[in-house]
Image 1 (cartoon, rainbow, N blue to C red):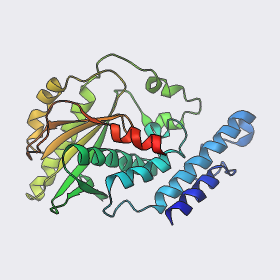
Image 2 (cartoon, one colour):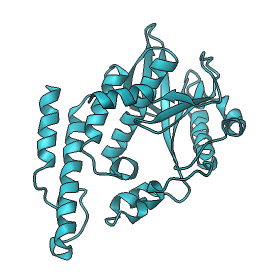
Image 3 (cartoon, rainbow, N blue to C red):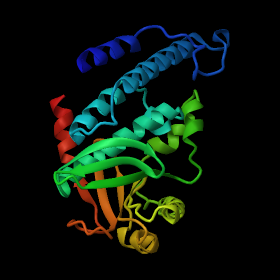
Image 4 (cartoon, rainbow, N blue to C red):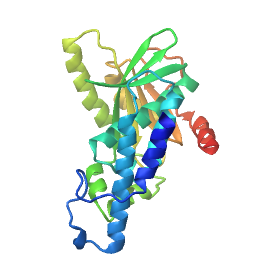
Length: 276
């Protein structure tokens, strides 16, 4: 029962956790002050509880996007601050994909058409959406960070100083280059894949994990339009999970959806959070 698994994970997060487990920091207990040691033990325990819960859930089967989002938010509640954006653990990378995909899929249901969602682990295929008519939309997911950001280093930095760039809000326009670079990188891989299989049809979702003000969607479209010809569609999402907006940048598939503008994908999330 999923409720039992959640309660078990929450209970485990409050129990002492040894520092010599796999994935913990390579420091001896006597090298750390008491308060720091207590903080690290608690952080390790919560992270382990979250990963245990993540591993106990099946995200590879078709389900309602909001159901997947609810499950992901349950795991997110167990993670220390900054873990979602800074975690280097590959299992946490899987969780970030689940949270991003379910947030996008729920918005897709509201803005485009109702779908089911499931996670995949294949070449250039991270998740799928399926409509009522059994048509599948195959998505590759990639995250764009600020230049110089190293999420792995942020995760390992005990003082949390490296998260300052994330905590400081900015009204400056977002640098489009990291987004464009990820589109180019993934497009090259898609072209190679299509050379082996002409039937490959992929959509691309770029999660913009960049702090800043607005994005000039028209200029961004101009910079990725050529690469968009290789994809069925290219989407951009930011504000995952609860203040999300999404934009359709390229639309070879022909979705009946406005292009080149931010579409609100957060009202349902705000209502959901309030109801928890």
